[in-house]
Image 1 (tube, rainbow, N blue to C red):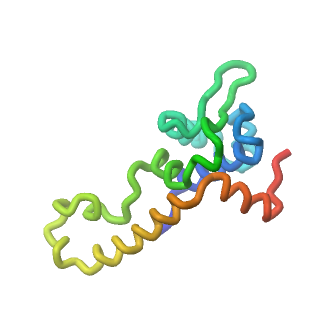
Image 2: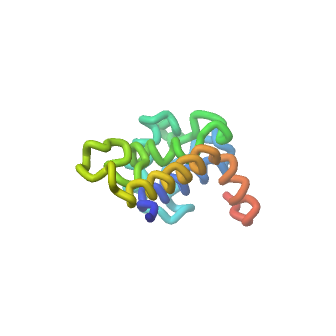
Length: 142
């Protein structure tokens, strides 16, 4: 299993907002430059995050993005699902009818356990947690 670039960039982008205080309206170009993310790609990711209420878009000369809530209220899972949709390792996990072998598939059983652990971890950690970890590693925002 590997994060998509969209998931990675989305998390890095919102963590930049966390480091800026969360409520500061920050231009997308600044986020993209600071995190070394292609701006057009980040724009698409932030559109999804705005649709799901993770960030708010501000237009105009002083436009940009800001978090909609306190980082301690936004789970990693919420960000990931805003970017990629429901989080499942196999299509047959949420939809057993997708495959004829779900009742005797050991791989599905194993990945259901793995998925449960991943989801619990993503739901139990917030952007504030990740922001604290970045701060502890010396990541700073100018």
